[in-house]
Image 1 (cartoon, rainbow, N blue to C red):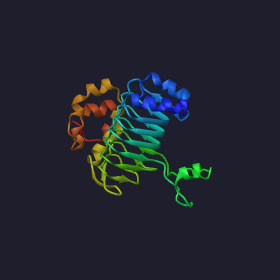
Image 2 (image 1 turned 90 degrees about the vertical axis):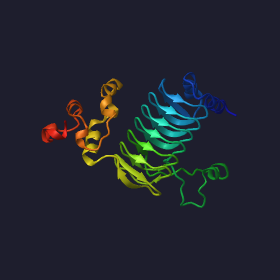
Image 3 (image 1 turned 180 degrees about the vertical axis):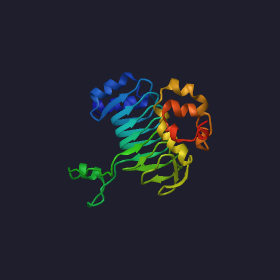
Image 4 (image 1 turned 45 degrees about the vertical axis):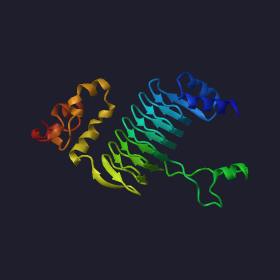
Length: 248
């Protein structure tokens, strides 16, 4: 066993404590880590490739990140999630257990599809194929056992039902489910969706979020449920073209 492989296995069992990050970057050829000090990684996770974890991210036990993977601020991955290939997950997302993001696929046009066979038996190469990166927006909830496939973009605020297989793009604030996943609902009516996308609250600093606690604790059934003060201060809508009653 090479030194790099020994180091990888050891830090996986330890949950990638901060002092090991530079050690891995130096000695493990398959790993380049950029992990914020406040990121939390449970024991038994496996990180390979170029992995970026932003502040306050959390990986629960058994998560596998392999490829060019970025997980942004305060996103949670519950146990046994796989992120494989070119995958980016936005801020404040809730990713339920056993969710899979599979950006790379096997080629089907040659006599065999097994990469290991080409590598070990033929001393040849069978590169994976892909339709493009997987990109997940902010404030997205993905249910248990969902699978997101190559080339898919999931919009901000979307919900993906448990067990769904997502083969095409998901609109912001859409609720999708099924195999293949289809839209079954919207989280909010159109005016509210537009306002939230303009607000981009996930880009606020946490002091601003706490100062607007009342906004986050509201249920949003219509545009008027968004306080006028929020709209004016954060530029969510052109208030000059909206009726005052719709904003108060």
